[in-house]
View 1 (tube, rainbow over the protein chains, first blue to last red):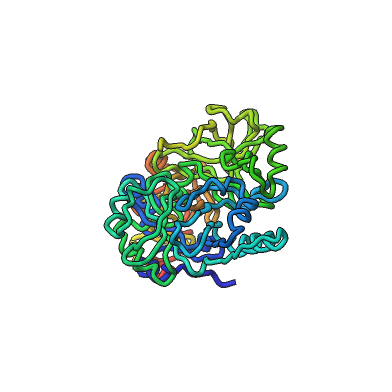
View 2: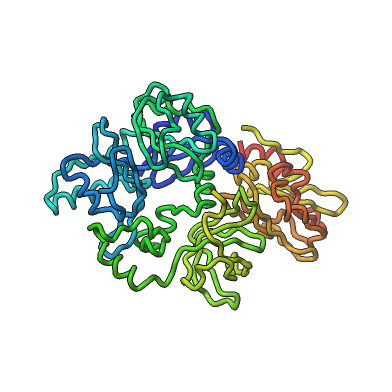
Length: 363
Length: 127
Protein backbone atom coordinates (compact mmCIF):
# COMPACT_ATOMS: atom_id res chain seq x y z
CA UNK A 1 0.00 0.00 0.00
CA UNK A 2 1.45 3.42 -0.86
CA UNK A 3 2.25 5.62 2.11
CA UNK A 4 -0.10 8.49 2.90
CA UNK A 5 1.67 11.81 2.31
CA UNK A 6 1.54 14.65 4.79
CA UNK A 7 0.21 18.00 3.52
CA UNK A 8 3.72 19.25 4.37
CA UNK A 9 5.61 16.54 2.42
CA UNK A 10 6.96 19.04 -0.11
CA UNK A 11 8.22 21.33 2.65
CA UNK A 12 9.91 18.41 4.42
CA UNK A 13 11.57 17.35 1.19
CA UNK A 14 12.91 20.87 0.67
CA UNK A 15 14.21 20.81 4.26
CA UNK A 16 15.99 17.50 3.47
CA UNK A 17 14.35 15.80 6.45
CA UNK A 18 14.78 12.04 6.72
CA UNK A 19 11.42 10.33 6.59
CA UNK A 20 9.90 7.04 7.76
CA UNK A 21 6.71 5.02 7.54
CA UNK A 22 4.72 5.77 10.66
CA UNK A 23 1.26 4.19 10.89
CA UNK A 24 1.03 4.13 7.10
CA UNK A 25 2.12 7.76 6.71
CA UNK A 26 5.39 9.07 5.32
CA UNK A 27 6.48 11.43 8.09
CA UNK A 28 9.71 13.28 8.95
CA UNK A 29 11.73 11.50 11.65
CA UNK A 30 14.65 13.93 11.84
CA UNK A 31 15.38 17.40 10.43
CA UNK A 32 18.72 18.16 12.10
CA UNK A 33 19.47 15.79 14.95
CA UNK A 34 17.17 14.34 17.58
CA UNK A 35 19.35 15.89 20.28
CA UNK A 36 19.20 19.38 18.72
CA UNK A 37 15.45 19.17 18.13
CA UNK A 38 14.79 17.79 21.61
CA UNK A 39 16.83 20.57 23.28
CA UNK A 40 15.08 23.25 21.21
CA UNK A 41 11.70 22.14 22.57
CA UNK A 42 12.88 21.87 26.19
CA UNK A 43 14.69 25.23 26.10
CA UNK A 44 12.93 27.37 23.48
CA UNK A 45 10.40 26.06 20.98
CA UNK A 46 10.00 23.53 18.21
CA UNK A 47 7.34 22.74 15.63
CA UNK A 48 6.08 19.30 14.62
CA UNK A 49 4.05 18.11 11.67
CA UNK A 50 1.51 15.79 13.30
CA UNK A 51 -0.84 15.53 10.33
CA UNK A 52 -0.66 11.73 10.67
CA UNK A 53 -2.96 12.04 13.68
CA UNK A 54 -6.60 11.34 12.77
CA UNK A 55 -9.45 13.81 12.97
CA UNK A 56 -13.00 12.54 13.33
CA UNK A 57 -15.91 14.92 13.92
CA UNK A 58 -19.14 13.96 15.68
CA UNK A 59 -22.17 16.24 15.46
CA UNK A 60 -25.89 16.14 16.11
CA UNK A 61 -28.23 15.77 19.07
CA UNK A 62 -26.65 12.50 20.27
CA UNK A 63 -23.01 13.38 19.53
CA UNK A 64 -22.21 13.70 23.24
CA UNK A 65 -23.89 10.44 24.17
CA UNK A 66 -22.23 8.49 21.36
CA UNK A 67 -18.75 9.73 22.28
CA UNK A 68 -19.46 9.25 25.98
CA UNK A 69 -20.32 5.61 25.35
CA UNK A 70 -17.14 4.96 23.33
CA UNK A 71 -14.50 6.69 25.48
CA UNK A 72 -13.41 6.08 29.08
CA UNK A 73 -13.50 9.68 30.28
CA UNK A 74 -16.54 11.86 31.04
CA UNK A 75 -17.47 13.69 27.84
CA UNK A 76 -20.48 15.31 29.56
CA UNK A 77 -18.06 17.27 31.76
CA UNK A 78 -16.77 19.22 28.74
CA UNK A 79 -18.00 22.74 28.02
CA UNK A 80 -17.58 24.20 24.53
CA UNK A 81 -13.88 24.98 24.08
CA UNK A 82 -12.66 22.21 26.40
CA UNK A 83 -10.83 18.97 25.67
CA UNK A 84 -9.92 15.80 27.57
CA UNK A 85 -7.61 12.82 27.19
CA UNK A 86 -9.35 9.44 27.10
CA UNK A 87 -8.97 5.76 26.31
CA UNK A 88 -11.02 3.88 23.74
CA UNK A 89 -11.62 0.37 25.10
CA UNK A 90 -13.31 -2.83 23.97
CA UNK A 91 -15.88 -4.73 26.06
CA UNK A 92 -13.05 -6.33 28.08
CA UNK A 93 -11.61 -2.93 28.94
CA UNK A 94 -8.61 -3.43 26.61
CA UNK A 95 -7.25 -0.22 25.08
CA UNK A 96 -7.82 -0.03 21.33
CA UNK A 97 -6.43 3.50 21.10
CA UNK A 98 -6.07 6.67 23.13
CA UNK A 99 -7.38 10.01 22.04
CA UNK A 100 -8.12 13.63 22.86
CA UNK A 101 -11.81 14.53 22.67
CA UNK A 102 -12.47 18.21 21.90
CA UNK A 103 -15.83 19.84 22.50
CA UNK A 104 -15.49 22.47 19.81
CA UNK A 105 -16.13 26.18 20.40
CA UNK A 106 -19.73 27.27 19.96
CA UNK A 107 -19.03 28.95 16.60
CA UNK A 108 -17.49 25.81 15.03
CA UNK A 109 -19.30 23.82 12.34
CA UNK A 110 -19.07 20.56 14.32
CA UNK A 111 -19.88 19.67 17.92
CA UNK A 112 -17.07 17.25 18.85
CA UNK A 113 -13.77 16.28 17.34
CA UNK A 114 -11.58 13.43 18.49
CA UNK A 115 -8.04 12.64 17.45
CA UNK A 116 -7.18 8.93 17.03
CA UNK A 117 -3.57 7.89 16.44
CA UNK A 118 -1.88 7.48 13.06
CA UNK A 119 -3.60 4.82 10.98
CA UNK A 120 -6.54 4.43 13.38
CA UNK A 121 -8.82 7.04 11.80
CA UNK A 122 -10.70 4.65 9.51
CA UNK A 123 -11.17 2.01 12.17
CA UNK A 124 -12.38 4.53 14.77
CA UNK A 125 -14.76 6.24 12.34
CA UNK A 126 -16.25 2.80 11.58
CA UNK A 127 -16.49 2.08 15.30
CA UNK A 128 -18.43 5.30 15.95
CA UNK A 129 -20.75 4.71 12.99
CA UNK A 130 -21.49 1.04 13.77
CA UNK A 131 -22.27 1.82 17.44
CA UNK A 132 -24.38 4.81 16.44
CA UNK A 133 -26.42 2.52 14.21
CA UNK A 134 -26.60 -0.26 16.81
CA UNK A 135 -27.78 2.17 19.49
CA UNK A 136 -30.07 4.13 17.15
CA UNK A 137 -28.44 7.47 17.98
CA UNK A 138 -28.69 10.69 15.94
CA UNK A 139 -25.14 11.78 15.11
CA UNK A 140 -23.11 12.55 12.01
CA UNK A 141 -19.66 10.96 12.14
CA UNK A 142 -17.11 12.18 9.58
CA UNK A 143 -13.51 11.16 9.08
CA UNK A 144 -11.80 14.48 8.35
CA UNK A 145 -8.21 13.20 8.49
CA UNK A 146 -7.66 14.14 4.83
CA UNK A 147 -9.17 17.60 5.40
CA UNK A 148 -7.12 18.68 8.40
CA UNK A 149 -3.43 19.30 8.75
CA UNK A 150 -2.12 19.35 12.31
CA UNK A 151 0.90 21.31 13.47
CA UNK A 152 2.18 21.33 17.05
CA UNK A 153 4.32 24.15 18.43
CA UNK A 154 5.82 23.23 21.78
CA UNK A 155 8.27 24.68 24.27
CA UNK A 156 8.56 27.49 26.83
CA UNK A 157 8.67 30.10 24.04
CA UNK A 158 5.68 28.61 22.19
CA UNK A 159 3.04 31.02 23.56
CA UNK A 160 5.07 34.08 22.54
CA UNK A 161 5.96 32.56 19.18
CA UNK A 162 2.37 31.67 18.37
CA UNK A 163 1.13 35.10 19.40
CA UNK A 164 3.12 36.62 16.52
CA UNK A 165 1.15 34.51 14.02
CA UNK A 166 -2.39 34.78 15.32
CA UNK A 167 -4.97 37.19 16.69
CA UNK A 168 -5.92 34.54 19.26
CA UNK A 169 -4.28 35.40 22.57
CA UNK A 170 -2.54 32.13 23.45
CA UNK A 171 -2.06 33.21 27.06
CA UNK A 172 -5.82 33.16 27.63
CA UNK A 173 -6.01 29.51 26.60
CA UNK A 174 -5.79 27.14 29.59
CA UNK A 175 -4.48 23.59 29.42
CA UNK A 176 -6.79 21.39 27.35
CA UNK A 177 -8.74 24.36 26.05
CA UNK A 178 -9.48 24.93 22.38
CA UNK A 179 -10.54 27.99 20.45
CA UNK A 180 -10.87 29.02 16.82
CA UNK A 181 -9.13 31.84 15.03
CA UNK A 182 -6.77 32.71 12.20
CA UNK A 183 -3.16 31.48 12.29
CA UNK A 184 -1.06 33.13 9.57
CA UNK A 185 -4.38 34.22 8.11
CA UNK A 186 -5.70 30.64 7.96
CA UNK A 187 -8.87 29.91 9.92
CA UNK A 188 -7.79 27.22 12.41
CA UNK A 189 -8.57 25.48 15.65
CA UNK A 190 -5.93 26.24 18.28
CA UNK A 191 -5.70 23.89 21.28
CA UNK A 192 -3.43 24.06 24.29
CA UNK A 193 -2.50 20.40 24.06
CA UNK A 194 0.66 18.50 23.24
CA UNK A 195 2.84 15.47 23.77
CA UNK A 196 6.07 16.94 25.11
CA UNK A 197 5.37 18.14 28.67
CA UNK A 198 6.13 21.72 27.64
CA UNK A 199 3.77 24.64 27.19
CA UNK A 200 2.45 24.43 23.69
CA UNK A 201 -0.33 24.26 21.17
CA UNK A 202 -1.73 22.05 18.48
CA UNK A 203 -3.13 23.84 15.44
CA UNK A 204 -5.69 22.20 13.16
CA UNK A 205 -5.98 23.93 9.81
CA UNK A 206 -7.28 23.04 6.34
CA UNK A 207 -5.01 20.53 4.57
CA UNK A 208 -4.20 22.84 1.64
CA UNK A 209 -3.15 25.73 3.90
CA UNK A 210 -0.71 23.71 5.97
CA UNK A 211 2.44 25.30 4.53
CA UNK A 212 1.21 28.80 5.31
CA UNK A 213 0.73 27.89 8.97
CA UNK A 214 3.93 25.81 9.18
CA UNK A 215 6.16 28.49 7.68
CA UNK A 216 4.71 31.22 9.91
CA UNK A 217 6.15 29.50 12.99
CA UNK A 218 9.77 30.59 13.13
CA UNK A 219 11.41 27.85 15.22
CA UNK A 220 13.23 24.51 15.02
CA UNK A 221 11.38 21.92 12.91
CA UNK A 222 11.26 18.62 14.78
CA UNK A 223 10.65 15.07 13.60
CA UNK A 224 9.04 12.01 15.13
CA UNK A 225 12.40 11.03 16.66
CA UNK A 226 12.41 14.01 19.02
CA UNK A 227 8.66 13.66 19.54
CA UNK A 228 9.36 10.17 20.89
CA UNK A 229 12.21 11.15 23.24
CA UNK A 230 10.18 14.12 24.53
CA UNK A 231 7.08 12.03 25.27
CA UNK A 232 9.14 9.26 26.82
CA UNK A 233 10.78 11.64 29.31
CA UNK A 234 7.22 12.50 30.37
CA UNK A 235 6.15 8.84 30.57
CA UNK A 236 3.39 9.42 28.01
CA UNK A 237 1.95 6.38 26.23
CA UNK A 238 2.45 5.64 22.55
CA UNK A 239 -0.45 3.77 20.94
CA UNK A 240 0.78 0.49 19.46
CA UNK A 241 3.75 0.39 21.81
CA UNK A 242 2.51 0.75 25.43
CA UNK A 243 -0.78 -0.83 24.34
CA UNK A 244 -2.02 -2.71 21.27
CA UNK A 245 -5.22 -4.78 21.07
CA UNK A 246 -3.40 -8.00 20.12
CA UNK A 247 0.36 -7.53 20.67
CA UNK A 248 0.17 -5.66 23.99
CA UNK A 249 -3.42 -5.95 25.27
CA UNK A 250 -3.62 -3.67 28.31
CA UNK A 251 -6.30 -1.93 30.35
CA UNK A 252 -6.05 1.75 31.32
CA UNK A 253 -5.25 0.60 34.87
CA UNK A 254 -2.26 -1.43 33.73
CA UNK A 255 -1.17 1.45 31.47
CA UNK A 256 -1.28 3.75 34.51
CA UNK A 257 -3.92 6.13 33.12
CA UNK A 258 -6.51 5.37 35.83
CA UNK A 259 -7.45 9.06 35.86
CA UNK A 260 -8.97 8.79 32.38
CA UNK A 261 -11.51 6.18 33.55
CA UNK A 262 -14.77 7.55 34.95
CA UNK A 263 -16.66 4.48 36.09
CA UNK A 264 -19.82 6.46 36.87
CA UNK A 265 -20.33 7.00 33.14
CA UNK A 266 -21.63 4.34 30.74
CA UNK A 267 -19.16 3.19 28.08
CA UNK A 268 -17.99 0.06 26.26
CA UNK A 269 -15.62 -1.70 28.66
CA UNK A 270 -16.98 0.03 31.75
CA UNK A 271 -18.22 -3.13 33.53
CA UNK A 272 -15.00 -5.03 32.89
CA UNK A 273 -12.96 -2.07 34.14
CA UNK A 274 -15.16 -1.71 37.27
CA UNK A 275 -14.36 -5.34 38.13
CA UNK A 276 -10.63 -4.81 37.51
CA UNK A 277 -10.68 -1.67 39.61
CA UNK A 278 -12.23 -3.65 42.52
CA UNK A 279 -9.81 -6.58 42.24
CA UNK A 280 -6.68 -4.60 41.34
CA UNK A 281 -4.18 -5.29 38.57
CA UNK A 282 -1.22 -7.65 38.72
CA UNK A 283 1.03 -5.67 36.37
CA UNK A 284 1.54 -1.99 35.85
CA UNK A 285 3.52 0.29 33.55
CA UNK A 286 6.52 1.68 35.46
CA UNK A 287 9.48 3.88 34.66
CA UNK A 288 13.00 2.41 34.61
CA UNK A 289 16.44 3.96 34.64
CA UNK A 290 19.36 1.88 33.46
CA UNK A 291 22.34 2.15 35.82
CA UNK A 292 24.74 0.30 33.50
CA UNK A 293 25.67 1.57 30.05
CA UNK A 294 23.26 0.64 27.26
CA UNK A 295 20.01 1.62 25.61
CA UNK A 296 16.81 -0.16 26.65
CA UNK A 297 14.45 -0.79 23.74
CA UNK A 298 11.02 -2.21 22.95
CA UNK A 299 10.77 -5.94 23.68
CA UNK A 300 13.83 -6.31 25.93
CA UNK A 301 13.24 -8.63 28.89
CA UNK A 302 13.22 -7.37 32.48
CA UNK A 303 14.24 -9.78 35.25
CA UNK A 304 14.67 -9.87 39.00
CA UNK A 305 18.30 -9.50 40.17
CA UNK A 306 18.52 -13.33 40.25
CA UNK A 307 17.51 -13.57 36.57
CA UNK A 308 13.83 -14.54 37.00
CA UNK A 309 11.85 -12.94 34.13
CA UNK A 310 9.22 -10.46 35.35
CA UNK A 311 8.31 -8.32 32.34
CA UNK A 312 9.46 -6.42 29.29
CA UNK A 313 10.29 -2.96 28.01
CA UNK A 314 7.65 -1.23 25.86
CA UNK A 315 9.69 1.90 25.00
CA UNK A 316 13.17 3.08 25.86
CA UNK A 317 15.77 5.59 24.84
CA UNK A 318 18.77 7.58 25.97
CA UNK A 319 17.14 10.58 27.65
CA UNK A 320 18.62 13.66 25.96
CA UNK A 321 17.70 15.87 28.93
CA UNK A 322 19.00 13.60 31.70
CA UNK A 323 21.80 11.84 29.81
CA UNK A 324 20.73 8.48 31.23
CA UNK A 325 18.95 5.53 29.59
CA UNK A 326 15.24 5.47 30.48
CA UNK A 327 12.39 3.11 29.67
CA UNK A 328 8.80 2.12 30.34
CA UNK A 329 8.08 -1.50 31.25
CA UNK A 330 5.17 -3.64 32.41
CA UNK A 331 6.17 -5.18 35.73
CA UNK A 332 4.37 -6.92 38.62
CA UNK A 333 2.80 -4.33 40.93
CA UNK A 334 5.40 -5.24 43.63
CA UNK A 335 7.81 -3.27 41.47
CA UNK A 336 5.62 -0.20 41.10
CA UNK A 337 7.47 1.58 43.93
CA UNK A 338 10.49 3.67 42.87
CA UNK A 339 14.01 2.32 43.48
CA UNK A 340 13.21 -1.38 43.09
CA UNK A 341 16.25 -3.19 41.69
CA UNK A 342 15.78 -5.06 38.40
CA UNK A 343 17.85 -6.15 35.42
CA UNK A 344 17.25 -5.36 31.75
CA UNK A 345 18.58 -8.02 29.37
CA UNK A 346 20.37 -6.43 26.42
CA UNK A 347 21.87 -8.82 23.86
CA UNK A 348 21.89 -11.61 26.48
CA UNK A 349 23.67 -9.45 29.07
CA UNK A 350 21.85 -8.38 32.26
CA UNK A 351 22.18 -4.64 32.95
CA UNK A 352 21.40 -3.10 36.34
CA UNK A 353 18.34 -0.87 36.43
CA UNK A 354 16.01 0.68 38.99
CA UNK A 355 12.37 1.62 38.86
CA UNK A 356 11.55 5.32 38.77
CA UNK A 357 8.44 7.45 39.07
CA UNK A 358 7.30 9.15 35.88
CA UNK A 359 7.57 11.77 34.52
CA UNK A 360 11.34 11.30 34.49
CA UNK A 361 11.87 15.07 34.38
CA UNK A 362 10.33 17.79 36.56
CA UNK A 363 7.52 19.46 34.68
CA UNK B 1 24.60 16.14 1.04
CA UNK B 2 28.18 15.10 0.51
CA UNK B 3 30.19 13.04 2.93
CA UNK B 4 33.85 12.95 3.75
CA UNK B 5 35.66 9.88 2.41
CA UNK B 6 39.41 10.20 3.07
CA UNK B 7 41.65 8.70 0.38
CA UNK B 8 44.17 7.31 2.86
CA UNK B 9 42.06 4.34 3.97
CA UNK B 10 39.94 1.40 2.81
CA UNK B 11 36.25 0.70 3.33
CA UNK B 12 33.66 -2.01 3.87
CA UNK B 13 30.28 -1.94 2.16
CA UNK B 14 28.81 -1.95 5.67
CA UNK B 15 30.40 1.52 6.24
CA UNK B 16 33.49 0.76 8.34
CA UNK B 17 36.89 2.24 7.50
CA UNK B 18 40.38 0.89 8.14
CA UNK B 19 43.69 2.71 8.03
CA UNK B 20 47.02 0.99 8.39
CA UNK B 21 50.27 2.01 9.93
CA UNK B 22 53.26 -0.27 10.32
CA UNK B 23 51.46 -3.57 10.85
CA UNK B 24 48.59 -2.07 12.81
CA UNK B 25 45.08 -1.41 11.55
CA UNK B 26 42.79 1.26 12.98
CA UNK B 27 39.03 0.84 12.52
CA UNK B 28 35.99 3.08 12.77
CA UNK B 29 32.71 3.89 11.02
CA UNK B 30 32.34 6.38 8.18
CA UNK B 31 30.91 9.88 8.04
CA UNK B 32 28.01 8.50 5.99
CA UNK B 33 27.32 5.84 8.67
CA UNK B 34 27.31 8.30 11.57
CA UNK B 35 24.95 10.59 9.66
CA UNK B 36 22.57 7.72 8.92
CA UNK B 37 22.56 6.67 12.58
CA UNK B 38 22.11 10.14 14.03
CA UNK B 39 23.08 10.95 17.62
CA UNK B 40 25.32 8.11 18.80
CA UNK B 41 24.66 7.39 22.48
CA UNK B 42 26.37 4.06 23.12
CA UNK B 43 29.25 2.03 21.73
CA UNK B 44 29.98 -1.59 22.72
CA UNK B 45 33.48 -2.80 21.84
CA UNK B 46 35.52 -5.96 22.46
CA UNK B 47 38.33 -6.09 25.02
CA UNK B 48 42.00 -5.71 24.29
CA UNK B 49 43.38 -9.14 23.36
CA UNK B 50 40.13 -10.38 21.82
CA UNK B 51 40.28 -11.82 18.31
CA UNK B 52 38.17 -10.30 15.54
CA UNK B 53 37.43 -11.88 12.18
CA UNK B 54 37.13 -10.07 8.87
CA UNK B 55 33.47 -9.68 7.88
CA UNK B 56 32.14 -10.55 11.33
CA UNK B 57 30.54 -8.19 13.84
CA UNK B 58 32.87 -7.10 16.64
CA UNK B 59 30.69 -4.53 18.37
CA UNK B 60 27.57 -2.44 18.40
CA UNK B 61 26.90 1.24 17.92
CA UNK B 62 23.57 2.65 19.10
CA UNK B 63 22.05 5.99 18.31
CA UNK B 64 18.84 7.30 19.82
CA UNK B 65 16.88 5.77 16.97
CA UNK B 66 18.84 2.68 15.87
CA UNK B 67 21.10 -0.23 16.82
CA UNK B 68 23.78 -1.26 14.36
CA UNK B 69 26.46 -3.97 14.33
CA UNK B 70 30.02 -2.96 13.50
CA UNK B 71 31.97 -5.33 11.24
CA UNK B 72 35.69 -6.03 11.23
CA UNK B 73 37.40 -5.14 7.94
CA UNK B 74 40.35 -7.40 8.77
CA UNK B 75 41.17 -10.33 11.05
CA UNK B 76 43.54 -10.00 13.97
CA UNK B 77 43.91 -9.37 17.68
CA UNK B 78 42.61 -6.18 19.29
CA UNK B 79 45.55 -4.12 20.55
CA UNK B 80 43.64 -1.04 21.73
CA UNK B 81 40.07 0.12 22.25
CA UNK B 82 39.00 3.78 22.16
CA UNK B 83 37.74 4.00 25.74
CA UNK B 84 36.92 7.71 25.28
CA UNK B 85 33.81 6.57 23.40
CA UNK B 86 32.34 5.06 26.57
CA UNK B 87 31.97 8.51 28.11
CA UNK B 88 31.74 10.51 24.89
CA UNK B 89 30.01 8.38 22.25
CA UNK B 90 29.19 11.62 20.40
CA UNK B 91 32.83 11.64 19.21
CA UNK B 92 31.66 9.15 16.58
CA UNK B 93 29.37 11.87 15.18
CA UNK B 94 31.80 14.72 15.61
CA UNK B 95 34.95 13.14 14.22
CA UNK B 96 34.25 9.69 12.74
CA UNK B 97 37.65 9.38 11.01
CA UNK B 98 39.65 10.85 13.88
CA UNK B 99 38.76 10.88 17.58
CA UNK B 100 35.79 8.65 16.89
CA UNK B 101 38.00 5.65 16.00
CA UNK B 102 37.03 2.39 17.67
CA UNK B 103 39.77 -0.25 17.63
CA UNK B 104 43.30 -0.98 16.63
CA UNK B 105 44.05 -4.49 15.45
CA UNK B 106 47.44 -6.07 14.81
CA UNK B 107 47.62 -6.84 11.12
CA UNK B 108 49.47 -10.07 10.44
CA UNK B 109 48.43 -10.14 6.80
CA UNK B 110 48.28 -6.93 4.75
CA UNK B 111 46.74 -8.97 1.90
CA UNK B 112 43.44 -8.80 3.85
CA UNK B 113 43.20 -5.20 2.67
CA UNK B 114 42.96 -6.24 -0.97
CA UNK B 115 39.36 -7.38 -0.54
CA UNK B 116 38.25 -3.95 0.73
CA UNK B 117 36.83 -1.00 -1.18
CA UNK B 118 39.02 1.87 -2.25
CA UNK B 119 37.87 5.39 -1.29
CA UNK B 120 36.73 5.86 -4.86
CA UNK B 121 34.67 2.66 -4.89
CA UNK B 122 33.11 3.52 -1.51
CA UNK B 123 32.26 7.02 -2.76
CA UNK B 124 30.42 5.42 -5.67
CA UNK B 125 28.53 3.14 -3.29
CA UNK B 126 27.14 5.97 -1.15
CA UNK B 127 26.55 8.37 -4.03
